[in-house]
Amino acid sequence: MTFNSPISQYIIIVVISGVLSVLLAIYAYYNKTNFTGMKVFMWSTILSAVYTFAFAFELASDSLSEIRFWLNIEYIGMPFIAPCSLLLIMHYVGLDKFIAPKKTWGLFVIPAITLLMVTTNDYHHLFYKALILRPHVPTPMVDVVPGLWYYVHGSYTSGSMFASLFILARHWKKTKAVYRKQLITLAIGIALPMLGALSYVLGLTPLGMDPVPILMCITSALYLVSIFSTSLLTVAPIAREHIFESMRDGVLVLNLENQIMDFNGAATQIIPSLTPAAIGQRLEDIWKRGAESGAFSFGVDPSILHEQELKWIRGGETYYYRIRASNLLKPNGQLAGKTIVMIDVTEHTLLQNKLRHLAEIDGLTSIYNRTFFMEKSRKLLSTAHQTGEPISFILFDIDYFKQINDRYGHSVGDFALQHVVSICQQTLPGSALLGRYGGEEFAICLPGATLADGGQAAEKLRMEIAGNPLYSSAKAITITASFGVAQAKSADVPLEVLLSEADIALYRSKHSGRNAVHLATDDQVQANEEK
Image (tube, rainbow, N blue to C red; front, side, top):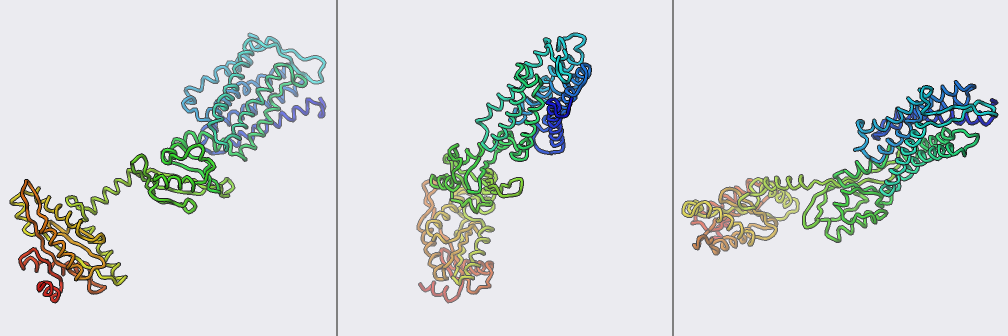
């Protein structure tokens, strides 16, 4: 056999195929990815290397006995390649329920029997009826007379490959365009050897030699190219269908032009306008459409979106989502687009709102409690000092409230408090801050009001309370209240001092016979009494 003979050239290509298989096996061994089929791919390439190298030695053999020996070595790898490929495809498309170890071992029963049949063929001839040296050829080659199990093995191998192609074809429509190059590579990697084996069985190959090892050189090269160009076996549709699609959070994938490239099912539940027709549309248009339909409580500019919380109104119900945007990078670090994750925080937000309500609102009257009234009033007082605007405070309590409780019961007393609050809410200006200061005592903050304005507001409120009795069990209960008013006279006066001044004025109203308004300056108190 000369170096330039067709057989020698064939051997060289087969050896290259084996080397490529080894390289793929090394890559699979050292590459740590989340792809669950990586071990199967590694074993598939190892078995392919065993098959191709043994076939090269078979072609270089000088006798029938050597050929038989290398045939036995070939079948250590060859029968197991097809079921490994089937397993790889099942991993790739995410058929998890079918690829548990307890279920997949059955795929290798027939290949194991095939290996046993080949190595023990001399005792039963069920695989080869005969191995005959081909006459009139420059190098020893054999023709085979197939036995029964040869056809079983061939049928099983072909069936495994057809099953792999069928699974890929079924997932073609479900697969986004970005993954279809990977599917094509895998399909070629299965279809080419299958066609080569068919042509070999039909006697259509040059010199009657098995073309599968050479075709495996082509498929291995395709795998290598696809691994580095389309992230084959590192980013697969399984990531989309079983991770991306199963995420409870809505996810949008955008390109550099802010066009929608992909989205998961959770996103369509959040934004109904995300239909297949939304692919390629700009996110701004989807956002605008949602805002016009009232789906969003307020708009958002996706070009500056980083993280914020939005309120969705869907089906008459309110949902809250935390929106996070992050850059999507290519393997070389270049910006490819961005992902937007919509996290449902409705339960958390509603709980927060409830806790905030409990912390801020008085449970009986549904107005601010003392703590939150003081907090809000300090902010208004600080703002007033900065702007130079006046600000006044009113303290008042219900006259003889204990007698109402003692005579009519505490439930009527509660109604009295709610009745007074209702009158306050109807009478006071919208800018006023109303809080329950304690028991039957209430506090009012009036931004922009002078002491005289505060006195007028208090007097109006006093008259409304006195003129609107509480009706309970067909009885009219007259309620009156006493008021004290104070104004911030300087920028450094603390809130507590202002409320103390209003409290002193309130006690003057009580001592003067109740149902009265007093201001926190002697001159204004006297003027008010003269009126």
